[in-house]
Image 1 (spheres, rainbow, N blue to C red):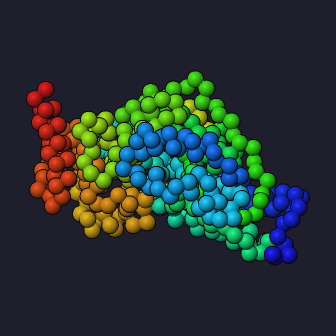
Image 2: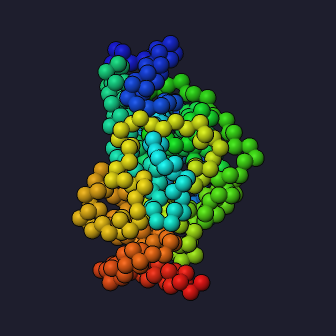
Length: 361
């Protein structure tokens, strides 16, 4: 073992202080420490899976207990360093004014800029290297939404916030517009105090959800969630949800946009999260006109890349079906009527049918 490896409480407390300072220097807004005891979260996950609320997200049920027992995923893990990084960009117009806009697309705010996986991972790796430079080689691994990790329960235990009724993490001083990343380590660091919940009697997120996916406080049926329907779901979007989706072409932020705690959220000055290609105010017709080559170019380094061009087209077809009728909208849809993708073609037909019905009203 390296001679600088901390072996008493004073050294460990000092190391945690350094880790927090390094985290700030690397652009994180907060660093917390959690132990690896997640039995309560494990029970909740098992119940959620049993109800089938995960839909096609089979990866949530894979890996046995590795998700809820960090030392099974990375043997030797005894502590988890959890980091959060704000991502809400400075914007005009405000995002809530774009919801159900008659001609513009709504893209979830987290996906407007560079893929957060890349940004967070490189910073966490740098944090791990700083710890190595201080104490010498030790066992650690970095995760950013990339492995079976129960990141929200870990973040709650690490004092970064509480899991709200919409199942997102909320920080009392910063709202919920932030990413999480973890560094599993074999250093037994003193854990932080868990965050306490402050949702009270508020039901804003439950009441505002377009598809009623939050079926009860702290309970999300992902198969109804617009983020699931536009990102995770590989096939046709169920007809019953298409009108409710409105103009949301990638993800959904409604439960965060209307959460009272987000009045404390601060826009990020992280350049990587600045909107690209006008995705924060793009016209639906413009996005639908992108060829696959355009899409490949404009989504390079973006989280949007994960859904592929076909699902992107599917989502915009639905949004165009919900848009205000115009010749541009109709022409845009008709051009894609005989596309190579049966799925896109079917959603285009649905969209055109919506405009036919509007014209008859």
